[in-house]
Image 1 (cartoon, rainbow, N blue to C red):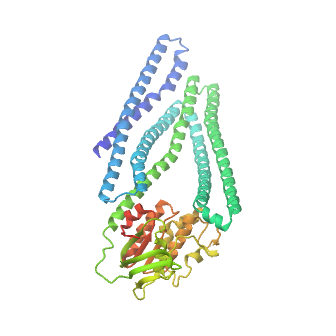
Image 2 (cartoon, rainbow, N blue to C red):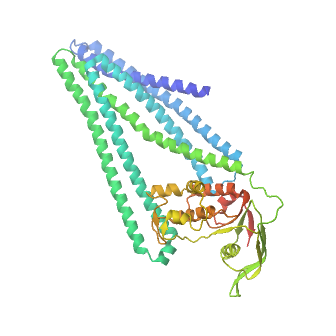
Image 3 (spheres, helix red, strand yellow):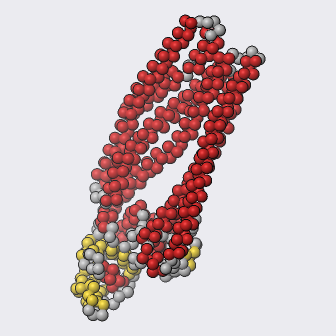
Length: 522
């Protein structure tokens, strides 16, 4: 803390020296024009030249010292952030998945550096801009209160237009990003859902939808480019026009004998210079947003680690009667093609199981047998009396109606509080809002409005709303973004207390890391 305060005071002090050493330049010009030239004072010219050289040298040395101190300060901050992230990871005791490891590396190598560099830029540029504005206005007021008043009147207009046009450009940038998201979402549907596109024969519909979203993206990108170009030209026009008007006003004051030519030129120079630090302050706002985004990424990652650490003590199973008991279960098609052979297992409440095995080993068939969709051809399956078993299959499916209809399909008693929680946990509520939809939006079996991942979320929410005792999940995480996968698995770990969870998933790293299931090989 003491070291942080020391760097703060030292850096700010040097910033003051840099700005103050640059401020007298227009005053030297004023003295040169008003006093030295009329008197043909050669000694005065030499004196001003030496003063100019000294001020330049002071600025160069001060900027060098500021660069050294601020860089050391920034690297101290970056190192502290990296050490804190590493300590949090070690303390969580969590084995990171490949995706989480990539994110962790990005946070350590990139985001920490971004936060540090942005902090350096914000502190130095922001402090320098504020000090410059105060000093320039003070000097202009000393030169001529009339010119200072003129500039003070124009400054609010300059700031207002900057902020207003920046907000407009920000909104249009968000529109561009939203259009890109829609294109990416559609491409994701095409890549992951090509099989279903062929089955349903909706090539033309998908092509039409793609052209619609790409045309919209072209329109929003064009509007954004026009706005940014116009914004730049307007700001430049104001920054040039106001100093010129100051110069014109100064000329009238010279005509009336209220001001000297040197003071007018000095005032014009300060008027030109004052808009640069103001524009700098306004330009720092997007940088602060970028820094906030990096901080939020780190906070989200560390919060996930802490939450998983807290959950690691849950789900201990004592000696109890199994919810499901399977003895020498077999299943075959037409009595010849054996898919499941002599499988035995017991599944207990409060326990997570992952069914593993190579493709075609019968994992999905086994879940269908447990749920009762398929009648076994050998052995027995016993489910504890009164226990409800719910299967979430991997195939995408919707009925014609609203999204709410699909969320509550077959649910006898709807728990709206739980529904609201699940909409947030899965990220479906955010997905719908991003597409200007809600749970009352219409969908159909062949809907193009929802991605495969969003359909997976709908199926998962519906399954939880039925409040099953045994939940069977077949590739529920497929096509769902990583952030929502983590939240869904974390929710399941909390939900598990009085339930049985049996999972089939190819995302083994994430499932193993968060759920820590008992593994059963087929």
